Image 1: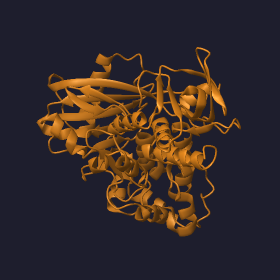
Image 2 (image 1 turned 90 degrees about the horizontal axis):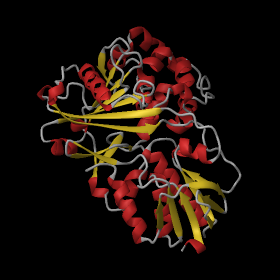
Image 3 (image 1 turned 90 degrees about the vertical axis):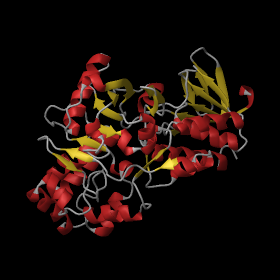
Image 4 (image 1 turned 180 degrees about the vertical axis):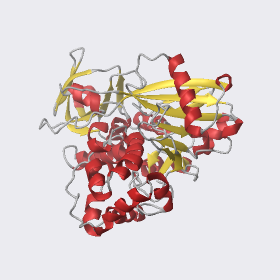
Length: 437
């Protein structure tokens, strides 16, 4: 097969699987190359205390239907589930916990003077944020980064106390480093249209599909990988594991062992770090550490802090940036946990460096979970612990290089599943209409 390829896909994460599946389904001859010994990338499962759980992404944004459409096409449409409606909380830098305001977008309030906003940022800061409604629309609309946009329109308190903890928890990066058009598409255009950032947020929320802002898959988002891999076999896609690529251009690739493959199209489907390394660029990156605890704790049965908690940087005595109470957030997790609680805490390096032992991290995670949830959790009640580490995003990696290579994945579409899948499917469709017609 490799002698007469239509497409080579480099990278077997979710983006590579989607592209390879769509091209294979259309009858094209495709080979997928994955350097590791498994497929799925950061969408992976692990077993903790006998419970199969997502080790990476455990939800997806529902602003668009990209994930739901794919799930339906691969047989998982009836398995899409919504999270518990109790919502998340936020812990401020002074340690005070509050429910996360309901009408926001990435923490940007849709109503600055709402009580749940005032509870978090205070009356004075809310009044400053309300000035947004008096500012001309063009003010801040040219800002490319989310942080400066929010700061100019609504003030520092909204940025520091609402937007930063939400964005750090979702995107593992400070708002000052994130492109507005990537993480909040349409926000700047709505700002110009509405002459108010708050009204722009409400416009975008109203245009979104009804229901929760995120969804999941019963049994784990990792089931997307299971079904995509099954489709690759069905559609005759050749998969090579342990296939590291040395170089790539628009006509083919050279593997580490020297083997050269050529094709009519080459797709690089990598995250920021790996894409930068393949391009010969510097790939400075940190580590995102996820610590999962399965614990017996009746005091958590009432969901004291909802479905999870986002932590403002600097909160006293807390090193985690976020906690997901998975057995409250997802009914299917609660069923499998059989009365126990599943807690997942997220850390950025150097707070939880790779050198930190699992025993140390378990102790840190238990102490953080106790502080975040306001409950004294007993170390003897922990039935299971697991640690997973991912490379943190590399911003600006994989620029257009003129080589003819098609780039998909986290390096170009960001970290969210919905954006990655939508980008991968759009580019597969472009290939079928163009180079692979």
